[in-house]
Length: 102
Image 1 (spheres, rainbow, N blue to C red):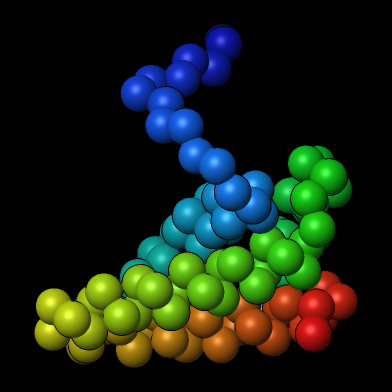
Image 2: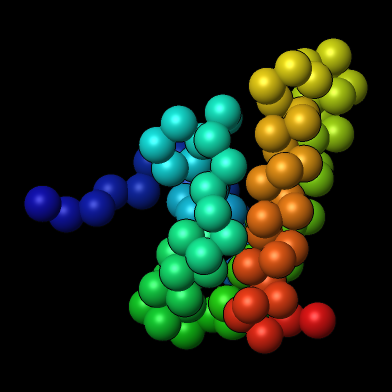
């Protein structure tokens, strides 16, 4: 089977910004905060496959999680959404440190 791009959107910026959904939205991601070690392991695997810096991926994932929490808070979606996004962001920040980030 071949991959097909459907409605691709051109984006200019840091490629490490993109993997967040792939790495975060696994299983029941809206209610479960994965262990930091699992996030770091997923990120290492993706970094090895893509040549991207794992710490940068984790740092961008932290930022995108905070962005998601702010979006949810703006819509009064605190219970089970914004608070979980903040917990996941904290896990991502810890994973970034494990992966060699500052």
